[in-house]
Picture 1 (cartoon, protein in one colour):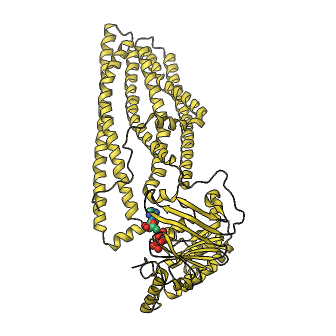
Picture 2 (picture 1 turned 180 degrees about the vertical axis):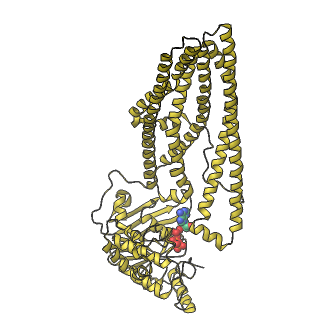
Picture 3 (picture 1 turned 135 degrees about the vertical axis):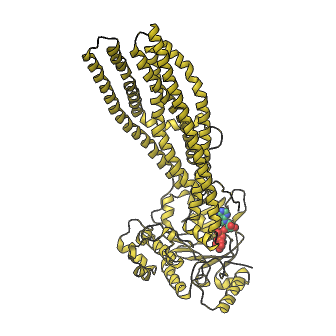
Length: 620
Ligand code: ATP
């Protein structure tokens, strides 16, 4: 493993965002046309109300210095100045509210679309994408856009309006001074843009390092990750990797701060010099009579100071605007991903599926053009019967279960439920019709009761309790401190493998599907636990079409048909006695298991494991 981090969540580094992205981002604001129009008007009004008081300053100064010193006039201008500021501030609050309304409207819609789209993605997407990457796009990226949308747009508008207003007023007050300042201003623009570039690239590196660190933390400090680290004693190694990113972040943060500091310092200095210059030149011009009043110089100097703030902010906004465009691209990239397993517009609903399952010449590869996990698979399971799939590890047994639930669609052939191609059925019909108890049961970080209720969200407490009883969960519930209300940890890590499986069985009992896929745990369970789970699954399987991915002989014995898989093909099929008579792969696996059982006795250790000690799933 390389010592340095691999970055799973790369910030945008490709070509600059296209005009198309910008157009698409802007189109999101379509439903808010009227809000936007009002907001633009408010921006113009508030910006004007911020600038106009300089005219009052000019009048007050001139009244005091060169006028007749009329106190009423001074009072009037003072009152007008306060009034303008007050009105500007109030309108600013309304503007902020409107801004949030628009920003949140755009973001909520985008986040919902993204979430809905991701829910429709096939399993291929989830197995090929790192969880951290998806999380980052749905949360961090959307949050970044939210900041840009609510902050950047109005800030840009406000700053441009302020700049235009201030420059306009300056020309109105004293065009020669204004012209001189307009010539000086670009001198300051170049270094500002340069520093802006540096800051942007530092920000990008910072995001990259920070994403690395989050990915590392989420991987190594998750339940499974920390188990792996501890079992190999790799705490030191992980601390080293974490330390590297931590140091890199420290350096980048300091550099970023320094660049920002230089940026502010240069602006402040330039602003201060310019104001000094205005006073210097203004005073000389007043003395020489070129400028008629001191009030003009004071008002001009006030404006000169203000002109730099919007300039500085526009340069900064440029950076955030580009970053947010990159974020929009990342979101659009996900939204544009085609939905592989989709529902047809005229998809059928089956009111009461009977549970006939048929595979017709099904072939499938996980990667397009890659090795096929299934090749020309055909079988039929009649309603209420049990079909067992056995064979060596990697033969394709679980893949059949995946296709039955339409996690993927076959490349060739058809999978049918009650003689309907699964691709013609509503996804909700299929989900209601097919239940599964997988090897690795996923539990949410919520109560035991709610985890069971996931099988039927409208189930009453009594129904949940009954399902738990049937799944043999009563002893566990009695042992737990809060019974059904006990929170089971994320992924069910607070429960044992056998307990988790019984929760899955209870969930399936509650769901009550006509078709059941039972992926038997490969873990070695002790004899009592195995018997209990077998009894629970037998209760569950009763009256349903059951496709069992069998690892234990006891299950296979009662199957109506057994399909023996090898290398993605069905190589033998029949009942237990027929297959023994064929003396092929099945009877070899059977003999192997018998020998194993004789050698080790019926006792097997409890706990999770892999295919070891599971002769129906391993082959020499
Ligand atoms: P086991 O008894 O060990 O669970 P299995 O018979 O159920 O094995 P499958 O899980 O169906 O076997 O796997 C069939 C083949 O497909 C294997 O070669 C496996 O490596 C491959 N495979 C399984 N899942 C994926 C995936 N998500 N992406 C790519 N290949 C996969």
